[in-house]
Image 1 (cartoon, helix red, strand yellow):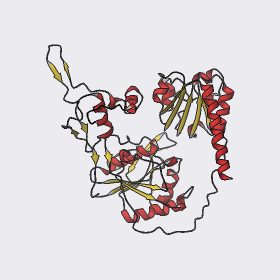
Image 2 (cartoon, rainbow, N blue to C red):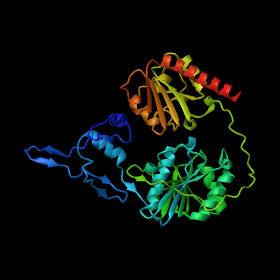
Image 3 (cartoon, rainbow, N blue to C red):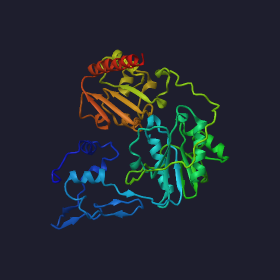
Image 4 (cartoon, helix red, strand yellow):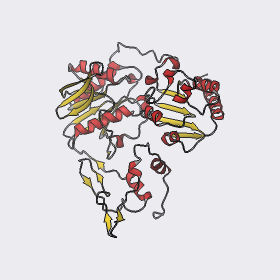
Length: 406
């Protein structure tokens, strides 16, 4: 059975999708070719991978040789394992974990932490409550500390600062890294800095040696300062970890967290009209394009899903949507957790505008369009029938939830 070559549909999809970050890695490498003089030339740089120390390693087991299927398996499975048996110090990262998963901002932050840790340090991720993330190993996490408890549910900055203080007292990390975001990391980092009586570096986008550079002056200027212990980093502060996998060994607190009466009470989420949410801040966007023929049904589906409406440039130019609803490089750059594109073929400007979205769902008749290639989930078919079925499914789900609650 080991000699049978098995297909990997996901790897084949990435190899066809020129917009996917791993597209270049999936392309077959030409190791030898016939030169113009009849001499066989060999590409000595086409074999191997870059190790965690920046040194090129060559796999002499033969796993990187042969057909595309074997080469794909090497790329997906055989990433070099980076181990830190006895860390000399820790670089602690507190990701936002919006929806229980690492966001693109969190992965950038872990990439920056990996740079600061070097070879002797370990990157420790501190997560509050339950999570759904399964890719900590490929995101650059050497150690994982999960602070469990109902006191960390919802909006609980005081309890979270208390938990971070306990971690700081036990491990004494060299640096603390938090995302300078609106999802909670920016506020938590500033509260934590005030608790430690330290001045953090905010909106950091680059670190060089013992200094860091952050945005200032309403984002129009750069401010350089010595590298502090507490860093609040902006998005795209570093490249995410992609060439190594890590152990993700569990870490536990040696002391029990003291329970104190919080001064802030979380009254739960407040219902907000999705149409009132700015496009740049929306987490769930339902966007329509030239392929939408029934706009009344489109608006009905968006309302049923509770999503913020968006549109392509063609739909806006045709007058179906307002100009402030346009998504793309010529409109609004969005960072939604879920972006649903209905009848949008995927012009390059539109794809640039949704580049930071976590999950993209495409509904289209053309299985070969660029939006289908970019999407994480694709539905091929007539948009009107699909939207009608989606409304029925949403209503059935909500009615079932009401019956269970009763």
